[in-house]
Length: 220
Image (cartoon, rainbow, N blue to C red; front, side):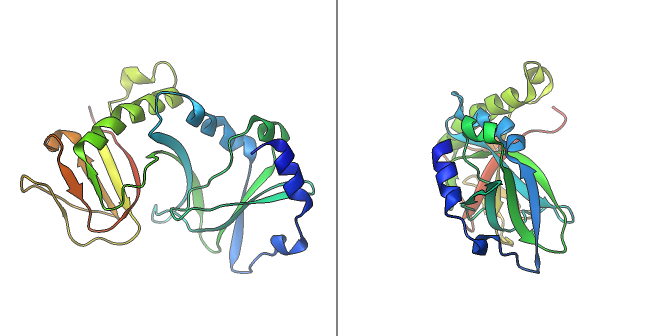
């Protein structure tokens, strides 16, 4: 989105878009605070993964529901599209970086949510992922994490060893692999380790995944 579009869109904002529900609260930040990290998404070498921002509930770590998002600079206003996974999506545009509008996300009142930056897969994997797909994601996730951490991060950061699959709802049944091994789902998350999969193996989920993030072995 170019700056001209941003300015023109703001001219059509009306008083109604500023209406605020009494049971909701605003989370406000400047565009530059998001752009500084999101600009990594346009670099080469990790086409299948990206940096994403979420608001996480301080009490239980779950993703906070975002009811509305918007950017505003003086009289100029534009609403943002909030996806199903409640990712904080803003356009990546150097012109917007110069304008540096205020970014507002509307969440439920009475909760405390912290800003969280995550590396996630671009693809919607639905109810399955296979070994080859995880093998493709892992090095790209490594590169993006390395880019974020700086030139020396690769010296002390373990390599990505698999993925974490996130679900929107509680899952009571485990995920079963072809060799008979099962993967438990805890707090709506399942860790799928690349080393435990056979070549080409497909892993089926009990429900649709909402996002896929890196799994990094601890204590490596």
